[in-house]
Length: 215
Image (cartoon, rainbow, N blue to C red):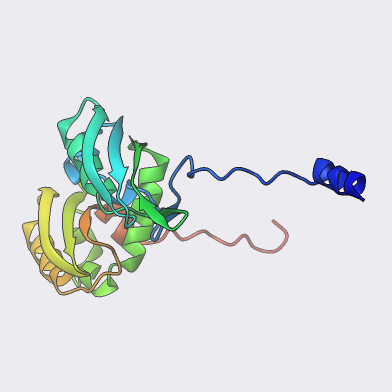
């Protein structure tokens, strides 16, 4: 009987040793900074990658942020720190004890298809009344340049709207800025660039002739 007991001990599987997680788990809104691309950087086509070092606190928030590697642009580096500071992670708990964890991330800034798609999605949320214009199409299209805005959102409210690049049509831009300030966005707190390409927004659709039967 003693021999059998010893055999059972020999073949019993060993318990896996527990370890702290090797990386934090993102929590909450998607960890991306594309919608917070600084408008002045977009207008100047400034691109780059910023590596941000930080600590995931015991409660999952982010603290002790620092630029580990610069993008080469102070504007993008500052925007990276501001964006990452709002990120959240699941609290790191091991054996009932909360822990902090040093971590880092790459924030990639590119003015290209991704920026265009982000701008398109943001435009879908802007009230159509803010972009409406009763003037004739010829007058609207007289100024073909785009307007670049920088929109500051604080606690789900528009805090400020700045014109980074003017199309030259001050009347239209004044009305747009006033309207956007009354809007209640569904965006988190942050600074968002918005490009208004008037030629695309107001140009009349092309009429495609329908061929007659037999052609």
